[in-house]
Length: 487
Ligand code: FAD
Ligand code: NA7
Image (cartoon, rainbow, N blue to C red; front, side):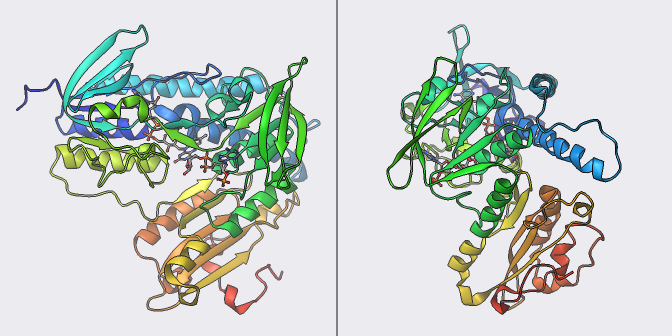
């Protein structure tokens, strides 16, 4: 029945997943509306259409990472004969960097709006919540409510950074929601949290020349292969990032001079304090599901994480679906949200039966020396297959372009985890080095094609690249042979 509801599909959340689903659905003839609304951060940062990735995630992060890499490249260039007057060790124009990044974001916001208009997707800049299972209410900026009805609803509201429950955190702390639009240079910065967002922010701030400290509660990069994680951290440490391990912040106070006094406790319970210009919390993200008034439709939300458990993206309410960061135990990555959103729309409005495959999704940590991986880490492989059933091949390597500027190569490392029986299927590939994302993407396609170790070994490399190191690995961990290059 085409007239029962105003729309065939209403999407709540105009980020990576929501927009992908909406665009695919209109292509398939559905009548679609998208709600997108950004609640300002506690510090007042707000942004336009497009979600986390475009505004306060992947895109500004990669641009600031690039800014830091360029600073490094200026120093390297002198070794190659470029005469550069007094290369700086600190970026002298945060304002220009910030403005360039924000202008790029605004252009993406604009293109996204135009695209929605052209595709005849109704964009509603309202904060949506459920009235009933077919009715979504959007609270607009002026407080007015817009009510729409739809046959099917997709939740794609993503998440926002969490703050610790300590005095001063909300008043004086910032998060990744604020750093990319900060109206002053961050200065000496403390980053709390050692997930990938914490490491990436610390990496680019240090690279831009700001004194940077990471406070690690337990381990670095939980969930990632821990040998790789520790190499990433060691490299950052050698580049000047301070690490405080097994420590937790207890309070943040503003001093008369405007700087921030941070009180923190170490593993022995002893209190310490230090002064920073900026404290950035990167302690994980909370899904924005409670705001949807899930109780109005009986939508089940997991109590600890506030995430949604969905089977093939379908929630416990049969006409309500979910994609992206709101999903329980799914990789929180833009291409995952986009792919799942597209496939879902094709199943709902096309004749597709194709399901999202969440396994072997490649990812990259854009730390100063990048870390890309696909498949299982060593710990996971051992847990899944047993230590006796896997072989780990590894090597440290020396990128050609690192020699002349005498860059530190001691953390350039590749690791391949394969089963040691049957066809020797590869179950994990890990790479630390320049352009890790570019390196690992192609190998993730190979893993989709069920790459085996013999096939990897029969692959001819491209010389001289870092990626070719994957085709050269032969030293097994079990042999105990030295994986450092002998030349
Ligand atoms: P989002 O993109 O978060 O979109 C949700 C949208 O819904 C937002 O605009 C939100 O304001 C809006 N919304 C929420 N509630 C409502 C409501 N009730 N009504 C209306 N609108 C609402 N991923 C990568 O793949 N690569 C990276 O390099 C990478 N780097 C990152 C760096 C940082 C600092 C961060 C924070 C994230 C990064 N990510 C990265 C993760 C990536 O941004 C997310 O996985 C992705 O944006 C998730 O998409 P989504 O559609 O689930 O939600
Ligand atoms: P993550 O990956 O969840 O990491 C959060 C980090 O913050 C992690 O190192 C935590 O340490 C640490 N943490 C968590 N709570 C606290 C408190 N209260 N105090 C100090 N440190 C804390 O979050 P990200 O923001 O990096 O990434 C967000 C998501 O994007 C993540 O879920 C990824 O899947 C993708 P822990 O290891 O728990 O001791």
